[in-house]
Length: 611
Image 1: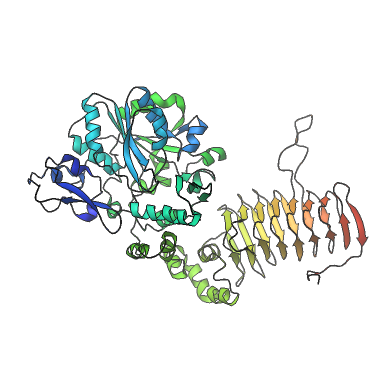
Image 2: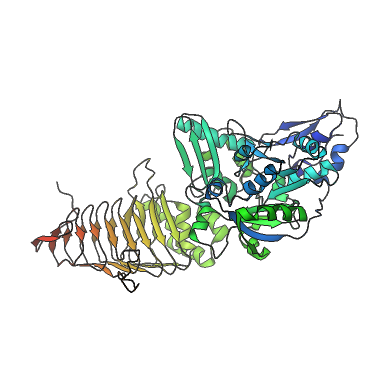
């Protein structure tokens, strides 16, 4: 026999070698790093056993029921935080082991550049199995080993991708009462070669070998999808989904998934396994704390799955949900990814340049690509009229700002209203978080976020606007690197031209007004609220937010703090380290910690540097 299944259909499950009675099947890795079966014709006895039970050679039909859906997470925060969503796998697997059973799942190799399936019989072994791996696990002989346990009447929880579970069922050929299968909502499996290149590049940069890798690390929260590494020299690597080229190439660009993932036959209902889990993306009516820690989606697909889930309920916080809720945030449940047109180019580049550079070159950020993907018609028209790239080139900003974000925020988002020729310029290392109901109005001049970033600095500039927040920018402004502007729910920030130096923060909970030509030094804090309630003897709020007004041509020197409800009149200077608790008259120089005093009146100042 020449071929078991077409190459583009093969999932790489490695079940065909386990079933071959003549040991004629081995595996070879292709140029993309995926393994495929190879038949030794000198050993093959033409029994066709491998082809007959290959789940990919026919449409695999599941015998499971239409699922019951739950949101759930572990009551134990330690378990939950070291897991990638709500910690459900650990809780269920622990139930099996406590009953004397075995758990089959994926673990990293010793070098953290590979992964393979193993069998756990101790609770301590579960730490190796938790967490997303995001690339293909080697399952060589795992089906054979699982069958031997089942033949000995041992309870087994088998965890894998849906295609690996289907392979196990085909290999076993009959029902085993003590087998429980567990899969997950799978976007796709990536090339082991690519993952190795990703880790090896970081080892080279850190000049040390890696000693720990965690994908979907929660140091920055569940939604960050952060990649985290620790190295033998003590250095660490932490990048979220907006910074990490591994996640960008996988989730945003679909560059290095296995070819069979683009035509997966298991991305449907009913599911293959007894229990299916995933991240409950888009879940509503949960606290910010739970959104930070992670919430699992759980699908109960059989009576065996239901019994296991019921046994774990005392260790879980759970709630029944609808399939429609789950579908909204998890299109990968039923929809296949689309192969990138740059996929072939990526694998060619990977042989000659580092991983991150290969992804960058295959992640188009030009206007043509973005327009095709997400632009409304009016956005395309505005680009044609305004010619923004000529403007950016003239200002020498093409290599300083994030072009993709520039196009997205200026031409795609309806909540940014700007006068023609005025832009929101987002420099690299800036983090923008705008609620869909927030509004920015830009007139007369650009707003620049993250300006003056130092070379090799990782300091970030933050702009956060919460529900119904407004920023009315009448003359533009500049937030330097490592500055923060946070406009809270229902708050309004009004500004003329202003500059904010690094380390400073403006936090607007009600209303803050900056006049024209306001200069804000380093490490300055401007507030209009105490942000936490102080209650009187009648349990009423005694510290309501109050408008903070800073008029035209005011200079706030370094380490100044402006508290709620004050007005600083035009032309004034507030000296370094001053805490402003009461109004300041015009053209005056004021200093002091808690007893501010006016040193001079009728002062004038200029932005020109002192020579």
